[in-house]
Amino acid sequence: MIFRWFESLVDIFGDADDAMPPRGVWRFYWHYLRQVRGILLSICVLGFFVALVEVALFDFLGRLVDLTAESPAGFFARHGSELAWMAFVALIARPLLLALHDLMVNQALVPGLTARVRWQQHRYVVRQSLAFFQNDYAGRIANRIMQTGASLRESAVQIVDAIWYVAVYTGTALVLFARADAWLVLPLALWVLGYAGLLAFFVPRVKQRSWQASQARSGVMGRVVDGYTNIATLKLFPHAGREDAYVGEAIADNAEKVRLMTRMTTAMDVSITAFNGLLIVGTSALGLWLWSRGAITAGDIALSTGLVIRINNMSGWIMWVVNGIFEDIGTVQDGMTTVAQPRDVVDREGAKPLVVTHGGIRFEDIHFHYGKQGGVISDLGLVVRPGERIGLVGPSGAGKSTLVNVLLRLYDLEAGRILIDGQDIAGVTQESLRGQIGVVSQDTSLLHRSIRDNLLYGRPDATHAQVEAAVRGARADGFIATLVDGEGRTGFDAQVGERGVKLSGGQRQRIAIARVLLKDAPILLLDEATSALDSEVEAAIQDSLDVLMEGKTVIAIAHRLSTIARMDRLVVMDQGRIVESGTHAELVARDGLYARLWQRQTGGFVAADVAEPDVP
Ligand SMILES: Nc1ncnc2c1ncn2[C@@H]1O[C@H](COP(=O)(O)OP(=O)(O)OP(=O)(O)O)[C@@H](O)[C@H]1O
Image 1 (cartoon, rainbow, N blue to C red):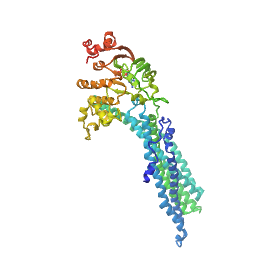
Image 2 (cartoon, helix red, strand yellow):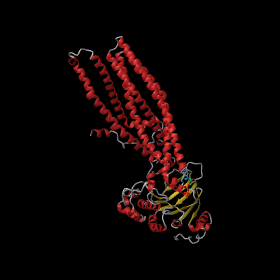
Image 3 (cartoon, rainbow, N blue to C red):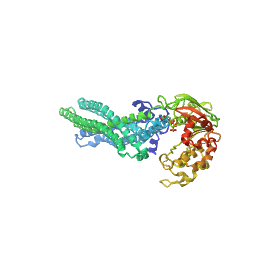
Image 4 (cartoon, rainbow, N blue to C red):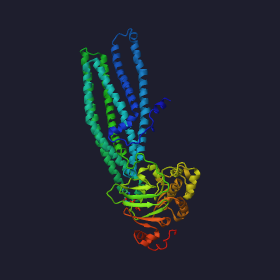
């Protein structure tokens, strides 16, 4: 009950904006910390009182030493109430304060803040453009999101908890020393200045080296994950030695960077311990000298020596805390470079949902080169009439997939416009645009979830009957019924493995077709949708595809006769431009690029036989 109350203070999913986190490490910190500033403030206030009480215990010690110098007769009668107060502080007040403080730190702040930061960063990053994910390793991005949340929280907690505690503790100690004798303040005050100087010298150096170590660690992570995700390639080209060397190089670099960092921390450790000796000897010697002159009492010596030994012990701990904080800051900085990146493809202010009435598509003088100087799509114009089926043909690298990608607005155009039923796709919401387009690509990768979850991605609210109909249409019912995963789940509940690796290419493609059947979007983009199927299965799902295409606008990247034959018109692309357009027969007769491509594919023998689109 009491735990629950504290745990509910940070709402993990509440009122997060979707803006880019600021760049600049302190502003990045504050972006997240201001969301829990009330809790941070209460931890500071509680920490203040906890530190006061801790120092008070040493004050009590000094007081007891002084009191016991008196004669025992009537001792308890004289000092009973003072002793009772000490007992109250130690027995009740201190545990209560500490409990409140711990509940705030451990229950409210620690789990809530980490989860909240991770949630917000994931939400921002997962909406990044495709290009963002193509420019980095998925594993590294994931690792940074996990690490940044934890490190940001850890460093913030250490600052408001440990550092603040020690500052209050030392400040109060100075006040108590001054109360006994102003001279007693001197060694501790000098020590504080020296300690700050040592930290000022070491910390920036440790911080810089820690950042380098963290960069190197990410490098190792990236190389390792790259190998694991492409494990099939690694096995097909057995260069185990080279691959080991590739990863080994990154590990060695990381170890070297960590060594450079720990050299610094070791030097810092030794310097501070040596320096602490001066504090202990200085305070005790000064205390004894003052006592010998009658300036302070034995209790004051007990208080001051006890406190400086305690501060000496804490200085080692604090050194590690400071180190940890800067290591965490390094990690946060590293994460910030990944997380705080502007999104390339964003919905415009006031973007409206796309409304598809007929399904006409118009590409107007579009240019797109993946940010390069040129060479991908230049000055391309194309009108696809509502309900028309276009076959996109062209040599490899002509820009066919790119054309499909910019229609989906996976990338923003560099110039020109694409209109769907008269609406510029740059001005509509991305969700509505992609919601109206069904895509089956050549290499479908599935989510590492159950078959059912993968199918429902097409339409989350579909009924079981609808799912079954789609599965039958895609001729996937036969194999789904036989699936069993490693944990014994069968059929629709079977898990498909990462990216669907536990299914064959053709099975994956049939799931993808079933998913698009379920989605039933008015525009279809097919990238050799049936390429991974054998001719028997392909013939079988042909009818479903024909039904699916009925009344829809279709752009299909076509290499194979079976696709080409079902299209109303073929559009031939070369080097990012449209060079020919017409029916198969017209293009063969024209004797241009298409005729050459076609001849090469068929060896020149069947061109005449397949001149009519109804040929299989
Ligand atoms: N993510 C990317 N970043 C940079 N350049 C890219 C990217 N994807 C493709 N390209 C380049 O764009 C050009 C067109 O590629 P695209 O994949 O559109 O061709 P394609 O006609 O679909 O070829 P294929 O038939 O081989 O699939 C190629 O030169 C390719 O190198």
